[in-house]
Amino acid sequence: MSDAKQTIESGKAVLGIEFGSTRIKAVLIDGEGVPIASGAHDWENRLEDGIWTYRLDDIWTGLKDCYANLAKDVKERYSVVLTELAAIGFSGMMHGYMPFDRNGELLVPFRTWRNTITGEAAAALTAEFRFNIPQRWSIAHLYQAVLNGEEHVGRISYLTTLAGYIHWKLTGENVLGVGEASGMFPIDSKTKNYNQEMLEKFDALMEGKGYPWKIGEILPKVLTAGEAAGTLSAEGAKLLDESGALRPGIPVCPPEGDAGTGMAATNSVAVRTGNVSAGTSVFAMVVLEEPLKAVHEELDMVTTPSGDDVAMVHCNNCTSDLNAWVGLFGEFAESFGIHADKDRLFEVLYHKALEGDKDCGGMLSYNYFSGEPVTGLDGGRPLFVRRPDAKLTLANFMRTHLYASLATLKIGLDILFKEEKVKADRIYGHGGLFKTKGVGQGILAAAMDAPVAVIETAGEGGPWGMALLASYMIHKAEGETLEHYLNVHIFADGQENAVVMEPEAADAAGFDAYIASYRKVLAAEAAAVENMPI
Image 1: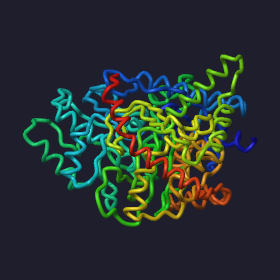
Image 2: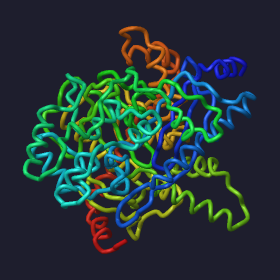
Image 3: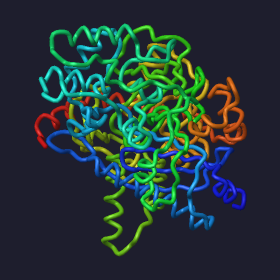
Image 4: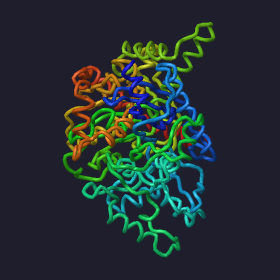
């Protein structure tokens, strides 16, 4: 504690803040990357006029409250007022659409990654580029707005993401980390910048439409991990810390997306490494040795924070439905006058799932709060279905929903590993699904039929990874790569202490049987989307 207090008092602590789907979280670390304080703010997206969004007021209220809770934690733990930091980094949910005019005004409500409203544009760009453009990518949103004839397109001065917006308002710099930028527009891993040929192809599509911009002019500048990305301005300091205690001038690293921070948090930035981030959404990433042989709509091509090629399976839905059911059981307990601690409730119900039948005993769940491009659905309705002879037990019920949280991911991973023959030496899991030891990790091992490792910091996830990227910027030796920095300075001991779970043959076979039924009944989910309007 005394070492941590000295680190904070001397202004040597590093801060990472990530805007996740349901929580904004801040993690403060020391020079060795060890978390020493944290703060959080819960928030939730809104479905307004058919668009999944967060209002700008939600963003700034959440950021201020998150930081205030961090400062409170520092004060309570160490009796120190937080005034100086060595570096800061901001990250957020990737993709989405935030177009601004020349006065810095947002032209349409923030369209998040969760929206599946760009199918026409995504398909057209995929064909034009011969490169998979998923619906949630910023360029798909922009082109769909063009195809829709939306009036605001001609007034766009700047297009960015949530992480880029936060960084811009706090530093004045219109930049993005390369990993985050790779979710806006395709990146050339050789130049570590937007793919020039595809920029030209997009501009050709815009010819004759009368827009006053070219695509390269409205996208943020791309930076790689370790590059300077500005400093906290006086205005930015006030936006972050309402108390006025935090001083401006703090170095800020390139803003990254939750994919990049997940790679950093699991030391999965080297070739043949991979990780799975499981929270509101779930995605798996593997750093490639060579390009994929074919274009797959189920697989995204993004990059590490250093700009190396990564294949990603991204699924819009993971734990939202699972969390809702756990909440229902908590409400049930409260009805009997029993207050169930939230963490304890998850722990008990998750462990109960391990007692269930390997194939879930004739039950299926579709956790689709929103559309799921991997399975070809533009909308979602959470759906639970069972055979009349199903074994309706609590264990089978919970196992069903844990399987459902990773079912779509497994469909995509089967393409990556079985069709493309991609190899990974290790896979790390991180995010909320892995907080209950041995449960989510074991389910993932069964889904992948491969060993899965989880380190102690897995629950810290993205904000810790963002803090590590900020720390790399100020602490790296000349010429030191991010891979080397993480291996030597952060994970030298942590990886030796990682908990590795091998897949149980019976679990893997049970998950395969579940998925076989899951595929057959997808038509019921599609019918629910079509016939249950919202």
